[in-house]
Image (cartoon, rainbow, N blue to C red; front, side, top):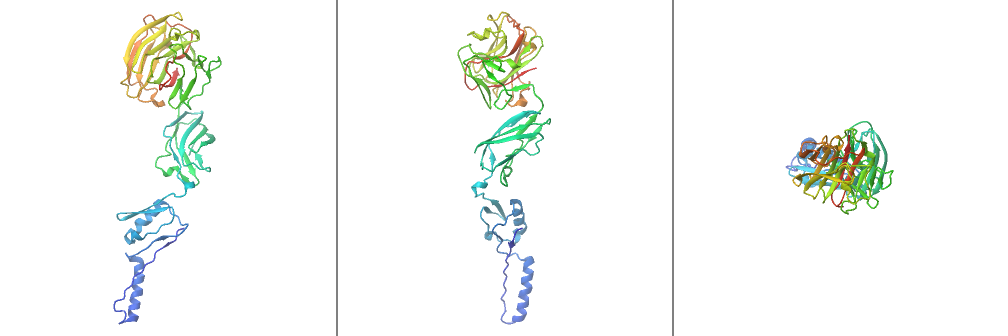
Length: 402
């Protein structure tokens, strides 16, 4: 409860010496009336340990505004009073460092699918050892929360069979990040089941290496890295490198479509479909793959390369397009019908952005062609395949086989 003391002084001394008794009665009556109607109130005090939230303070000041001399408002530590025209705004100064308002600095939406275990990663400021993290109305389970540093924390969760968006609330005792407008809103999104494989850091889980048991295999001296923008590989020796997504393999004549999402190539590279029959020591991996689209620079998609039915012997389909005008610099290419000659169509799209809900966008076709000519890929066991060359800014964001 708040103790607000309003002291009103109103004195009238006119002719007091002439009729003292009568004037004393008049003074008393005027004093009583002034309690209800005086516009000359001088002070309003909040005592030590009194507390009103900001909206209640401002409501009080608004109601008393016509009877309050604003220049004489007295406030306590951590409360700031600002005169503004005919109003008074009262707010907190948060002078106690241990009670600073927490703030999530990560703005990227954290995404997962229903009935999936995921680690969400957030950066923040104003951490204290007693900080609490919560996801209001979360329908799944929060398995653990880890404070990695004063500027970073992770939440391990298992989502329920429910789609939706969720807030993240962090609290330093009774001080919440919700005091910052919008800082907590819709930071987690749970999507329906997806056949896309998210290659970004915190995306789908893959094992990788040169061993035969790995989901993603690559040449022995290569390495794989994932960050928030996608996946990339070391090694740039011309056309010796190879990457196979073996856990996503399928059998030719299943008539599946494979889609890749990636950013602008840093330099020359190829991406497409390979097989389990390649010579992994070859220095011309484009003759080993089933079908590859060749980007010869960061501005151009150049030709299509295949083996011609005999692994190690290349075929070429000469087509090219300038890709530099795609504003987002995020592309999707799609091979239909297993990448089989004369029955498969190759289509290159410019996507609106790199976020997952744009991966299925097909509104902006840059180029499309039916595969043919001297190309004749015909291996049975096929899979997503990359020939990376330049270790730079380019990222592979997602891949889908369906």
